Length: 221
Image (tube, rainbow, N blue to C red; front, side, top):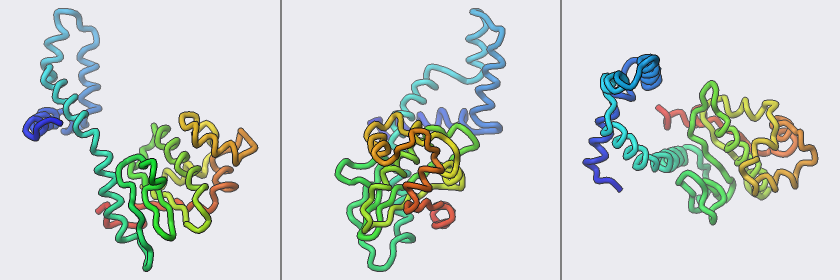
């Protein structure tokens, strides 16, 4: 782990490149435009004019390595803040699995005497949600295996995840990278061409999909 001072210095170095008008996307587009048509003699000057140095790269690599743990912090903090709003009278928590990704001994992010729940804190964008779709569907399939004594729930942010679950994408294709979950799916489903919406309707009807931003708006204030 890097010393705190090194991490703080690295963040300070790259923060101006990430912010500002147009953000990082506009900065990269400008660099691309300025590099077009340059040659051996002129590229270094263009790169320097955009403020990019070996120190910039080192800082980016350090921040990525150290802040890769941020997803665990988001997951743990989000669940912890939501629980006081979600738990019901006489509901008792088992040990939750707060880090991103479940502990092998704890199948769900949250399990109580009345429910089993998974949490997704990424807010989907207009496009490029393929990985999030697959991860959501994988958890949905696993939640169909929750004992009937428990209420299966999956918490998401915003309306897009629910729209995906009501869509016509191939259900089986969502699980190609999750062989163990694919085995669960194949044991349930006879039709390999079934859509996500049809799977949800036929096999996952008791799994409740909840928009956290509507259920616990104070957490995202």
